[in-house]
Amino acid sequence: MKKFFALAFAAVVLAFGVFQP
Image 1: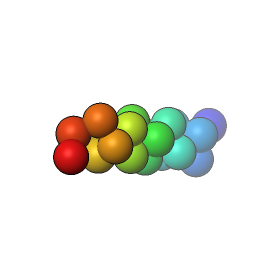
Image 2: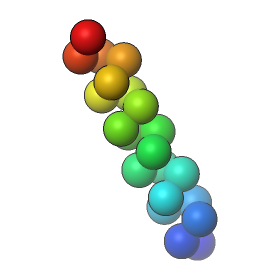
Image 3: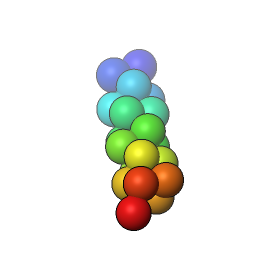
């Protein structure tokens, strides 16, 4: 379950990087 949480966090960070140039 920890791996999934880490993956979700990475997805959020990646999304922030994409939304904010």
